[in-house]
Length: 158
Image (cartoon, rainbow, N blue to C red; front, side, top):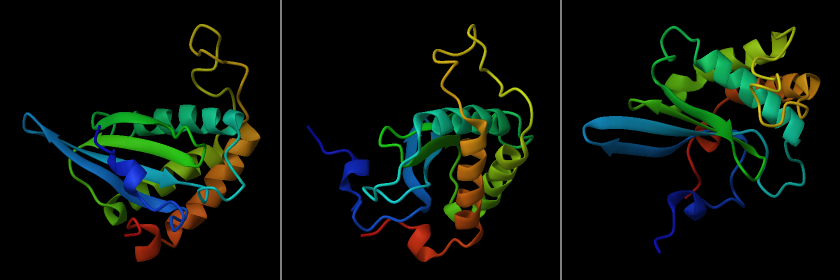
C-alpha cells in the first residue's frame, strides 16, 4: 500500500498552526483540506474528547452558517490523535487566505452561550460528552496561534 501523505509529515517538527494538508481534484471539482493543529504532536498535552467534541459541534455550526463558506464546507471534524481538526472545502485556498475565517470561528466558539447545537440525544451519538468551558479555552488559545501565523506555522516542515 502507498503511504498516505499525512503520515509523511515530520510530526517531530510540526507546531500548532494552520496548514494546507491536501489539494485534490476529481471530475473537475477541486477541494482543499486544512490541518488546524491546536496541539504539538506527541507533546503530552492533547484535546480532551469532551472539549474536542464541543469544538467540533460549534466549529461545524459556524462554518455551515458562514455566508461564503456554508455551501463550500465539505467536512469539519477532529483528528484521531486529538491534536487538532481537519476542515475540507470545495475550492483551492491557502492558509493565509483562510486564517481570518478560522479566527472568526474561534471567536464564535469563545463567545458562545447557551445550549451547544446538536447535543440532544436524538441529534448526537455521545450527547453527554461535551465541555463548553474547555472548548472555549481551546478556541482562545488557537486564535492566538492563528493571529500570529508565520511560515513555520503555516507550511508543513520538510
